[in-house]
Image (tube, rainbow, N blue to C red):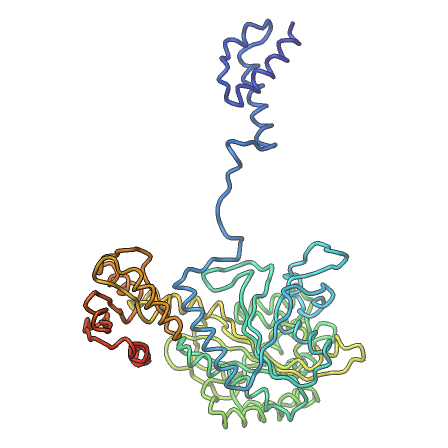
Length: 519
């Protein structure tokens, strides 16, 4: 009887779960079944149903973007589009053409190119017999592209999304999915001329975007490697020590020194000698001083880098950007593929940037983050070329997401409206039953290349149409009425001044162009 009761219990409990409303008291008629057993069985079936899923009470989940990603509203996209246009305009002004590459690469293409940051690469599951990874930056795919297509000379820009399995800091523009804006010059040229142009491009973009005061730090990997050598760093530790020095913009010297000594096994004496050099900043004068330095002058690598640094500053003087550029021995940039000049642009607060004398740290500026970086990577293309043919390259990447974050904050703080559309004129009517005429005029404006809009109502109120223009920032309204149609004119209203003028229909397009070109 008990077994029969349990079978019936499960059947009835299942029906109860499905919403049949079967009374629990009915189940108690079966001998040996207690109320607690019924409750336990119903709970077990409910749990099983939740696991299997059902047609009601479906699994609830939180609607959110994945960690380290975000959506963008129309206002944010308007700001982004303006920034992209500024950057692309600068790239084109310097003669660049554009390319595109796949969002994922063969895993072996990306492996071993990013030093300690390689752990941040997103690996994908095996698909069709290929091990793939999402691209970490646009530089390595560019080098692969050059090697594949046997290209020896190109000046290119590339704007696309990249992916890093990093710990995101959304408020500071640090994401797992984000855009990079790269400009690169590939080819065999005389030293430092392309490098100087890349720095000029950073200068132009940051100035035009009006982000505030900025400083562009420059150094050279050959100078760093020479410094490490004369300070007693073993050759096999160059790259890992370089990655630690690269953290000086985020950590104090004491913490960096501790990591080098305690975690990476560097001697205290070598760490202290490195500390003396990485405290130095200056310009061409610092390069000249280091060429006479008893230790640095022993390294051929360092001397070659310092000689080129002097040449670079002479070109930067001609490009009129030396007021923003500083030779900083603490700049390391940990990516493995850099071979020569490296640079990084940071935004600063509290007025003009003091450029210190050679060997001095100068007045402390408060950094609010890197917004551009790059350098020379002469050996990367050769890593992909079957014959090892090298194509010298130098480039720069704009940290676009951090730029967006800053400009979004400025827009929020400002009372100025951000237009999210480019509509030049709203086609409106002051009377009923003029939908057909409004649609006809709108089509004429579209055919003429005018950005026009019409409300999707048969008989909208004129006040509603004017309010839409106010809210959207549309500068002009073309108003149709029965009298205007008889006279062959259109009443053109300036939204801001509220002035109205009758314009012959044949002259309307030209009048709109004239007025909107002045806006």
